[in-house]
Length: 478
Image (tube, rainbow, N blue to C red; front, side, top):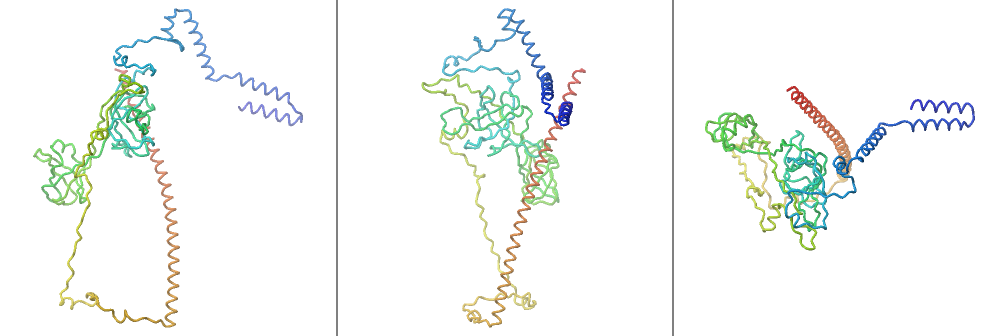
């Protein structure tokens, strides 16, 4: 580029100095430059020429062989008719075969035959009416396969913990874990609740992409254990009904406790009785009426169900475009078919809290004590009059001086109210600016957290790669 620019500058300067058109020289230079540009070959052009040369050599070698041997080495070229033979085909496939529905034949990669847990990033379709529930059966269409499975929805919090979600979020993505054939990352996924086309509403429930497949996916949910103290010392208490055995207590030794009144504590050791009771210490002495609870996390295991959609193995009625294949139904569908109502737990129903208004006895001070009190401490409660007093009945007529004072006070009050109004408006404006500034700070903080998250995962990936290389070297040395 620098040589071409220098050449152009020299030609242009020479043209300016001569004052002539110099078209012949310029045209010659341009032709030389074009010739140089056309003569240069890129790496891609060289690779294409190599491929074409190799293809030409292969064709020359294969043309001299027998057709059967050439097909076995090269494969069947597009446009040829082939006859394929399949083993272990179900008899229903032949019995209910319909020529109106052509079959697509595809191949699977060697790793796609394995089964395992697949994690998918999904989002409920905005046209689907209802949100999706965890462990409700969904029909997934991934690659060449259509199958029914029970997804477990989860989301990752700031501590990189996968927390279980009972339902999918309304307008954002979440993670879904299901048991099925392993697929490469970034494979598209579509989910349906039913494969029947008779459903009038929009059928696509969710869309997403495959993120990873890992057998060690750990999804947790909150667990709240409740216990009751039965013996209390100074800052130590014996708690029961939280665990069922000493083994469970040993698993949670050192865990933090909390009472309803806000006193924090810690699990120390199980008691000699193997009934789950344990000794705990607290910051302060607790009461026997306190309730002790422990906040913990418990692992949720995905349900391993893989039910392939075998619609070609079922009968089609005359005039129908689909078979009568029916997969697993949701609990809501079963209740709707059988006319069952949703079971209600009486303890889970919100109850209206009715608190009786406390009525305190009036304060009665003995007359002797009241007489000894100073005047400012004496009660000044006056009994209600049955008739209006003279002060309430009479009308006040203002003197001219008093009227001037009253008018002046009204003006001063009006000025004060106007200033107060301006002050409040300015305070509201400052508050709005402060909120805008805080929102910008939050956005920058979110961006920082995002970059921090990327850096964390990049470091984890490098660490795993180093461990894998180390294992490979050790295996080679062995």
